[in-house]
Image: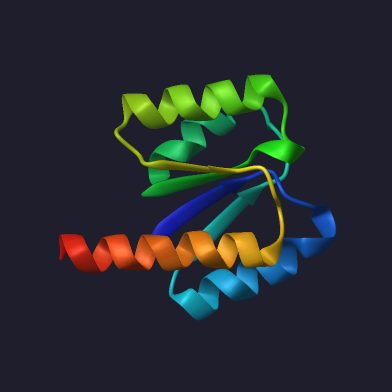
Length: 99
């Protein structure tokens, strides 16, 4: 399952990646809004927003694209590895319920 993380801290990206791999997810990280990142969201199955580390505009673009494509969005103010781990655990539980 491919998950897109928007926000977070530069120094934690390797830890985010390791946590996602351990949980069985393919993680794509955007630490800030990049040109055309809204188009790149269509290739994922869930979006995680660390709202304390992104602009309102980036958040609004991500939510609009996700809604248009029926992609679930998970928003957290904290940007720690534990927060991502809890979110991925939640996604794993959701996958088990839907399968």
